[in-house]
Length: 221
Image (cartoon, rainbow, N blue to C red; front, side, top):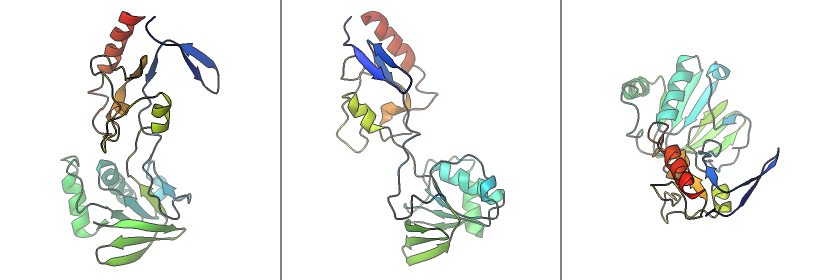
């Protein structure tokens, strides 16, 4: 064939292949805060359901859709307090239009406290320190829900010798007609194709990646 041989080793077996499709997404690689105390068990980078946070003081970090959804749900399901900490001066413009009035009204009435242009600088078992435009604050806290986004596993991509754009997005370079990277025989599919622009590809607009790859493989194998 026109592809080199690949050997893929896993915990279960070793596989040989003429081509590899990397479709690893990004959800297992959270964007970390890099602050003292982030390794405490009260800090979560993933959210599944609100019940553990009933009667608890919750800090939600981030200003996107995930952060807004988490703040609203934990508030409505009985958290003792919900505080949003957002590095930007406002919530993201991409907030769902049917959710924006809800979160803005909850912030306006004080049901959910929000600090903008602010960031957590230290996390302790029962408190967090927050840097705000008005100075440092120490807030009572039981859980930190860091909805700060995710990124591709660049170590894995680099192991495949995939190259990237030389900008902040660090998008893998590939042929959009075949989804093949510059490394022959290595194909990309799904949200991993967007690099740090993790909202570029979704289930809906990446559906044609697989047919493109299958067509390319059919022509070469």
